[in-house]
Image 1 (cartoon, chains in turn green, brown):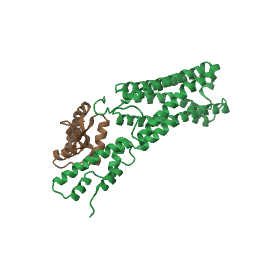
Image 2 (tube, each protein chain N blue to C red):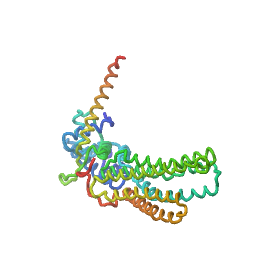
Image 3 (cartoon, each protein chain N blue to C red):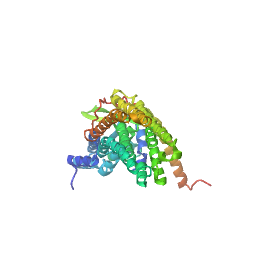
Image 4 (tube, chains in turn red, orange):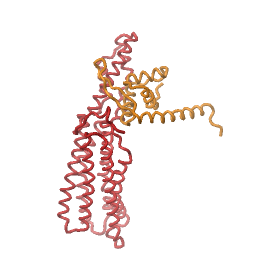
Length: 306
Length: 106
């Protein structure tokens, strides 16, 4: 009969912690080693031999694969954060491609449009919305674990609702093209609809900004450590608002198109890309090094606010 | 016997009297259940971490005999949750008992 050794405990821990981020692994190792040693000491006091005590202490940890699944449910895997990091960096590129491809289709097709263009309009924001939702989900998990901060659902709900409302006009436009073969604004009796489209899009942007500000307000109650993230959220909210102003200017004063486009890229695209790269870097650090590039004191013990 | 769904309630109950580290929590549950409930470390710690993330409990480290130990204690939100969970559990037990005793008269 073979008895467990320290190597067996290490193997158990390696299996249980597989795929978790470095910081989480360190904490789990400390806690479970302590649990194992307490259990070992208890069994030795009960009069068991050293080998028996080791075996029973290891049995009391349970099945390593079950533990792995449970820890993944609790903390998320490092691959999840790595994917969120990569997506954060890629999102501005996807957005840029989405916006740049759009006019190509418009000019090629003319007033009469095929179902393909309709499908394009219907789904054009999907490659952006889905990664953004995933990044929000991962960011929420990270905030909960690292900062012990629970954001109320309505704050995130506001942002998500804003994204959906923002995409709604283009989705409806896509459906309209699929059904009728024409865009809203090319229909003679739909003169006012474009304005409605803009208003709905603007309402979506307003909700997105409100959601970002609501999240930043929640973070306000924590110590200085999260100041950077709060600023980032406020900056993103401003960027959204600013981008809408630019878009509206483009529609109202077409002559300004060139300069406004430049302003749009300088004022919106660059800050947005910088923010996304910072966000991506934060996720990648969380996945591999267990550190986040923000000045963080240990707030878990005394300063966390519910 | 190992009913995983009851673990968060039991943890909150054990911590309602005083802070404990993980091993103590497992032992208290085992002791107070007369040896019927025996939660393994691989089940206990993920649940503790989840409760901590939900803001119901909080942890801190303390050096003890040269070892750094992580203690858990109940937060105010945890006390409220404990009352709520306890009521739910009582309702659940009453309902199951009622069925086992022949069901409610219709």
